[in-house]
Length: 237
Ligand code: IPE
Ligand code: IPE
Ligand code: MG
Picture 1 (tube, rainbow, N blue to C red):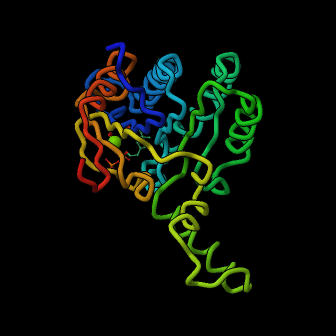
Picture 2 (picture 1 turned 135 degrees about the vertical axis):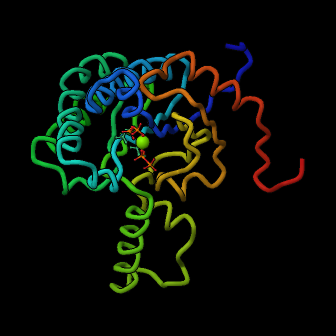
């Protein structure tokens, strides 16, 4: 990579294409998801080595519950397996894991796995890996509005005192910077209900590569593309 490249502080990834990757190989979709987890591991290590501070990955959307039950179950098992297989190494690499999304819908074993990885890695200072699980932007915003409305109703704040910051602070991502770069794999060009508020001034990078084939090389390409962008934020330079 170019020595002078600016490393985005926060990269977010819509990891898409596991199913097509499996189909191309005559495998089950669940095998594509397993390969996707391996690609995630490579990408996490590469991002941390490059000095990325925040890496957010879309792993399971609120809409994904509508997939065939066997696939949903395979994905839930993969959360548990992923924690088991990677917790120690993430912790050794100083990677802190945090989960955004609504947890109450998960089984007790998935919730425990999430809590376990968050606590094992809590002290990591090199990079934060944010897993979006049972996440969607609309549900996040709906929940935020409910919280803010309850505060107004309780007389804790006036409605006209609600600012953009009030809203940002009521999201799962309250403690995180907005993503500088959003990557989507597999040749799809949409957000699919991911970080809509936070993406206001993000740069987008799309690649045809299917998620299980993504890794350090692809990440480097995305960062190089990011470096060719001119972020104007609505201003004139
Ligand atoms: C992304 O891969 C992983 C999840 C949505 C959980 P897909 O499963 O969406 O793969 P395609 O889009 O069907 O190829
Ligand atoms: C978005 O991918 C969700 C995740 C990557 C977890 P999908 O494959 O579910 O999105 P659509 O259906 O193509 O929009
Ligand atoms: Mg998909």
